[in-house]
Length: 222
Ligand SMILES: *Cc1c(COP(=O)(O)O)cnc(C)c1O
Image 1 (cartoon, rainbow, N blue to C red):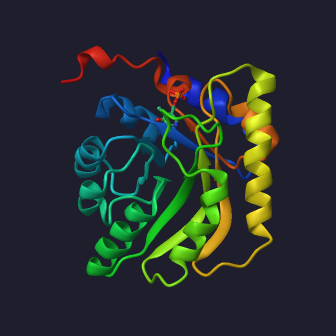
Image 2 (cartoon, rainbow, N blue to C red):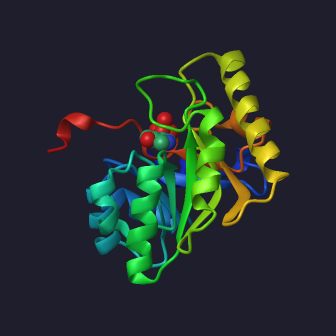
């Protein structure tokens, strides 16, 4: 496993203007250090506890991205630690983020996660409910929506393209509209096995774990 080589190879395939997030969940700090030495500053985690631990132990100039489902009662732990929360999926969660960030006088940068495949087992806002979120956030002071995120259903290349295109269309549509506290700058989609198709469809932020750090072994985690 040569992390530096994986990063070099991946970066070579990524267009200018696309941000690469190294998804380091389940991986030890030593591996993150290798990625850091290769120039990576954006790291993605999907659990609050793991993110906070790595935040304390790792370089302070790193930008942390929270990718996994965020429970309302855990928001208080991440205030001031994350650069971008990718997984905002309900109005209740939004309210809690606004409340906690207001308390610390900080701004939360977030993405709205869209359940583009309408899968019951997945988190995310359904397309038709996006405008409720935009309405809710209008009066906020401490939350800024920077764009959208999606985890598409498992499928082949053509199926993936359908979902990536759908996401891009929603993103572009919202971009033409004016909402208070919303700027549609970031479209976060694409992982190890589909990031090239995602970029092709208009993604400007890809989240790559396995392709950089190798397969994850969940059995070793306590
Ligand atoms: C784990 C994870 C990734 C990275 O997946 P890989 O297939 O390892 O690249 C990306 N996005 C989210 C939300 C994840 O949970």
